[in-house]
Length: 274
Ligand SMILES: [Zn+2]
Image 1 (cartoon, protein in one colour):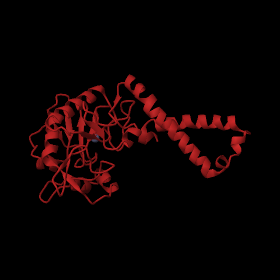
Image 2 (image 1 turned 45 degrees about the horizontal axis):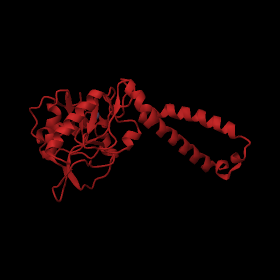
Image 3 (image 1 turned 90 degrees about the vertical axis):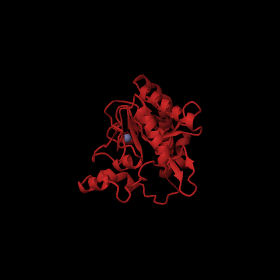
Image 4 (image 1 turned 45 degrees about the vertical axis):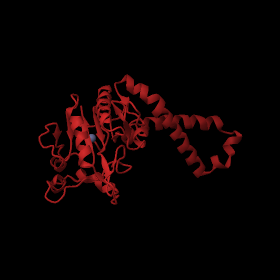
């Protein structure tokens, strides 16, 4: 729970204390004889519901003000007129993986609103950001997402049959692992990393096994999005797989870097750092 959500482990300990106190309080009372409480499955279900209720309460009511006091704020749960940005999946937010510094928040607001002036239905879809607390606490499997200044966002996709761009839609619920792999003749960094023994490099591709696709990379709009990101003064660098940097004609852009074989591949999302 701590690895996945940062606060989940602490909430679990807190829940155990409350559950124990509750059990002592109700001992000998009529409700303790109820068939649901007496059955093993019933008790597991009650514990699950109790923990989930406490976790949700703490995640959405207690964590945000505490995180704000320590320098991080949550990204939006849904896109709005004045901030066209949304999570790929709200489970990212339920897991407290959507925190950034106020400076990153402002940067994203600038970029998304800037693109919205060109495309009225434009939205940035974000994936993993950072946990709410403590610099240096990594958000696995992303080693560098540990200080509020990193964020992954989805590419822009278009329908394979109609060529219609679908702003605000990612390619899978996980958001990672559906890769725009190197085509014939393109530089294959993933293969090179695999040959060097870095099995983690394509790990997310292996766990997201959905192969049938209705959409494909919209190169025109994804390139515009990347250009807007790297032109922003706050953005220091972004990570993108080398073959996509070439395919999109962005070879001269010095802010687009290769991340190294020890990271995960970046032909399924864009990694931003400020
Ligand atoms: Zn990242």
